[in-house]
Length: 301
Image (cartoon, rainbow, N blue to C red; front, top):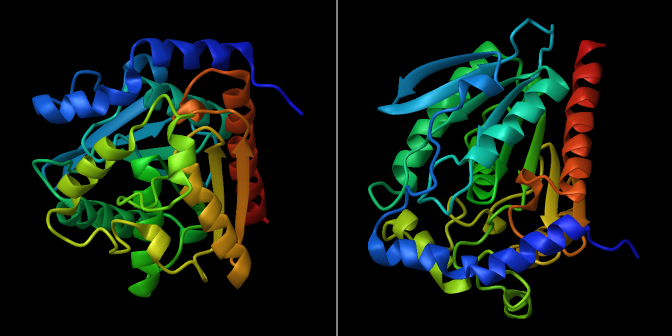
């Protein structure tokens, strides 16, 4: 059995020490969600940054300093419980992907609750997806997201499939939030292990994002949406995060219908681990880079 790195153990201890689990609850009480936001990518991390607006929200296109010849493009949807924007770890993670793959990245700052609901978020990102597949071969597009953004990415793919739009070449979900109601009974056993996320505060954030729509709707909880014929899906999760109850369920559902889904669960990892700098994080990032490079090679042939 592979033991968790000492770096991850120390970080987990510190999260418990500062009561990170109840941080979102404190934000919900105060109504302030931007304390740790970093909505603009630091120029030092990327070769070129282009910005435009869509639905009055910023969309960033991140490119290497020099052209790499890569045909692959990544659409990345950030996490943050649908109430928070990008944070600095997101940009460091995307910088690593850019350097490792040479692929361009589009990163939208999509509408967030409580000012907006999923309706506005989908209107923007669906429009952006259609723009991207008009410029890039859909088979060269990677749809990726972490946490809430991972759930968003899967729901977007499901909607595009239902609307008979071309599917991306690969979908990569990082600790995705797949059910905003968090009704899976297995979550209870994981709640004590997860020092990062609290079940009740997540539910409250989900209700704000839903705006009165049933949380069972697949655009909010893609665990309830179709999995067949979405293309290649890769899921990364940590065994000590409450969201892994539903990533395991997704894996079982995919296996039962023969959907193309690869699943990697890292032992003892907490929510958000893949955006950090643990040895386990570096290993998973390299797996993602290798997946994207393999897709690039296949499309070049």
